[in-house]
Every structure is written in structure tokens, then in C-alpha cells.
Image (cartoon, rainbow, N blue to C red):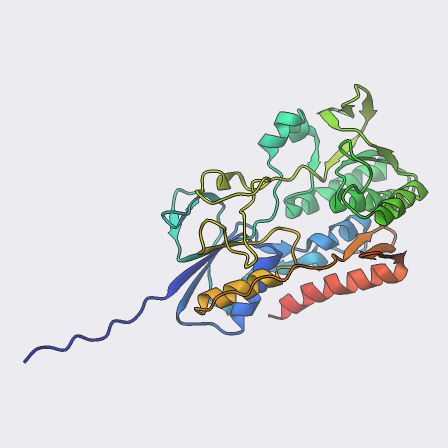
Amino acid sequence: MTAVAEPSTPQPKHLVLVGAGHAHVQVLARLAQQVSPDLQLTLITHHPRHLCDGMLSGFAAGHYALDDCAIALEPLVQKSGARWLTARATGLDASARTVSLEDGNEVSYDWLSVNTGAVQDRAQIELTLPGAREHALFVRPLDSFGALWPRVMALAQARPLRVAVMGNGADGIELAMAIRHRLNNSAVTLITGGAAVAAGYPPAVQQRVMAALKARHITVLTDVAAGIQAEEIQLGCGARLACDVPVIAGETQAPSWLVHSDLALDEHGFIAVDACQRSTSHANVFAEGGASTGSPLSTALAAAVSGFEPAPRQPAGHTLTLLSYGNRHALASWGNFCAEGHWVWLWKTWMDRRFVKRHHKN
């Protein structure tokens, strides 16, 4: 009699999440609601928690404690059934489907999702801004900024400080006004990198932001920082700006280990993705930019691991912009609509706190 072979049990597919950004917090929460035996999940990040980017300026202004902005990862990891590797990714071979870790180990995957967000590469920034590594306070990673900010507060108790914020995006604009609110006897300067204030935002936003900066007596320099030394910043025009605390809020880059990954990258070095958040060169790789709400990525991954074709992301007609002014006022813009006031700040802080609380419960 011929023996009948036992049917083989299909092996679980392996989804690896690199980074614990906003999008991956939502992915973990979504998978925690329905743990699948057909899916093996691994999270790679050395950070023990996710800090909400949108609450950073509120922390600097004194409206939130750092813990108010944080989502602990361990409860989400446990409920999702994931394996957590507390390590940094240092390499990726998309053809071999492996992620390299700082300890020399490799992790293989069937699906990969990258959500590290933008980083501030100290070595790369040092090349264009000599002295930054020694003298500047970097905004990213947010945990490091959160740990060092109390030292600035301690210095400010002893004497008025001269603070310069380098960055013309939301981080720089919000931090400049938050610092001015918190350190009201200190001088604050915003260095825009040579562009007009809030360049890239609609004209109505630019005008209101400039008016808000002027009303708060924040000096605006539409110049570039060319070097940093003890107690001063050298500007591109050749002038020198006296400065006790230089804060780098711009100058963000994609992770350097993506360069040799074999993945198609965009002009900024991030993973190029299609309307389904998939790599344009490797369909089993997904990615989300640091500024996204993350919902499209979590939805796309849920479809992919379930064997369905992810739905294309619908292009947004308008983008909602919320910028904090430091003093519990904020600016909102949507298309041609623009408004500001305390109610906008209440709306923004309600949304940020709701996101943190919702994922604390998961």
C-alpha cells in the first residue's frame, strides 16, 4: 500500500516593520485587534516609545510633559503578537529580502514596511554646517531633544539666552514661537535657509506666520547658516550671529542605509512608492513618509498580508495645515480658508491628545 503524504502546513508569512513612526503605531494597533496565525510580525526599532511629532512644540512651550506626547510600544507589541528587536537597521538588500542590523545579524522578510521618518544625519549635516555636531541641539530624534531641552531651561534660569532656530518648515516655525513663549526674556532668531518665511505654504499662511513672528519679536533672517562655533553662528552673507543655543530643526534626510538597498528612491533619497504605498521597484516593500497620518499605509499592509490588492490612495484635494503659535494659539488653513486663534489650538491639541490616548488603550 502506498503511503499517503500528510498535507504540509503553510508557513506563516513574515512582515517586518522597520521604525516606529506614526504609521507603524497604527499598523501595530490594527493588527492587535485581530492577530493572525498566518502572519509572523517583527518590529525593528531601538526606541521604547513613539513621540507625537505634532506635540513637540507644545512640549517645548511647557503645555505638555514629555510623557503626554508618548505612546509606549511594549503594550502594542505584546497585543499584536509581534517580536520586538531593539536594534537599529543598518542595511537592506531588497533582492535578497533581508534587513541588516547593527549587531551584524540579518532578518529575512516576505513583506517589509519602512516608517523611520526623516532623520538628522549628524555626519552629513556636519559636512555643510561645520561645528553642528559639537555645538547644536538637534530636534531629531525627538527623544534626544526631549532629554536635552530641560538643560536649556536650566540655563535660562541663570540668564537670558540667545537662541537661534534653523529651519523653515513646521518644526522650525513652531519651535521658534514655542521657545519665545517659554523663554520670554530671551532673544529668539529664526534662520530660514535663504527662503521666504514658510516658503511652500500658501501666501495667506506665509503672511500670517510672518505677522505672528513679528508680533512675538522673533528676528527672522532669510539667510543660511554656514558654520557654528561656541556662542555664534556664521551666516552665508559673512556676518556672525551671537548665539548660546543653536537649534537645528530643518536639515532632515532619508536613512543613509537605503542608498545601497536596490530599491528605487525619490529625489530626496526616500523610498519611491506608488499610490498603494508600495515600492515602485519591489512590490513586497511598503513605505510611508514621516509627515503622513499613517492610515493609508496601515490599510495597504492589511490588504497585502490578507492576499488582497491594496486600494490606491486617493489624492487629497487640499491639505489641512495646523501650526502652533506657542501661546495656546494656532493657525489653520485648508485650501483658500485660513483662520487663527485659541480655538484652533484647542482643536489641534484635542486631535493630538486623542491619537495618543487611543493608542495607550490598545
